[in-house]
Length: 111
Image (tube, rainbow, N blue to C red; front, side, top):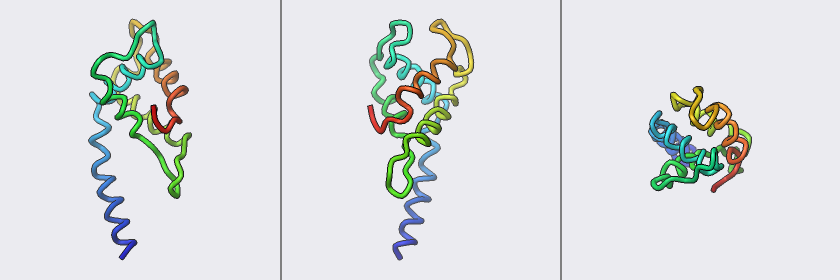
């Protein structure tokens, strides 16, 4: 019985997860996370709480223990879903920004 409930809970989570990884959400998260690291003097813009929370809600656990490295990999993949994540911008190289954000916040449990 417990295994059946656990399997149902895992399936429900797996079905709900793709909504959090929408392309527009990834771009908003990338923009807001760039503000958190102060790219080109930028700061966190108003309305960034949701996109920043979306980023930090991506967490990987194994046997109930938070796993920083796999979490960083998933968060980086999420940011790379933004179509502009591989381009140049007025603030510099977006791939470099993705790397900087991942390096600083990728393995953190929360903000």
